[in-house]
Image 1 (cartoon, rainbow, N blue to C red):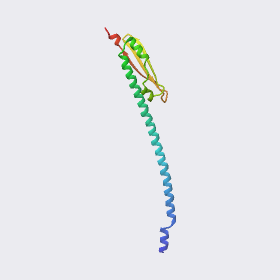
Image 2: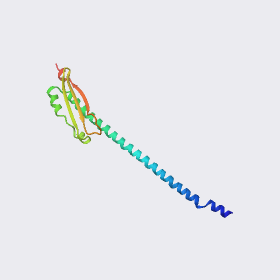
Image 3: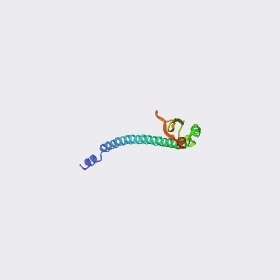
Image 4: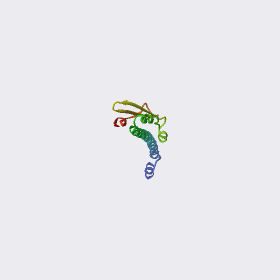
Length: 142
C-alpha cells in the first residue's frame, strides 16, 4: 500500500500537467508583455512628436515676435526697407525646414499695420503662424 501511495503522489501525470500549465502561462505573459510594450512605445513616440512640434511652434513665435518688435520701432522708408530684408536665422533654419517668412505692410490712418507670417514643413495642412503689430512712429512725431 505504501508503494501505491508513493506512486500516486509522485506520478508523472500531475508533473506533466503542471508543466503544460506553466508553458501556457508563459505564452500568455509573453503576449501581454509584448502588447503592453508596443502600447508604451507608441505613446512615447507620439509624445515625443508633440513635444518637438511644440518646441518648433514656440521657436517660430519667438522669431516672429522679435522681428515684429524691431519693425514696430521703425517708420516710413526704414520700415519698408527692413520688411524686405527679413530672413530666417541660421539657428531657425537648423530647426525648421523650408521656412517661408512674409511681411505685409498696410498704411492706415492710425499708423502702419505690420503682418508677419511664418510657415514651414509640418504634418497636416496647417495655417502659417501670423503676428500683427502697428508702427505708429511716423504718426506720433510732431
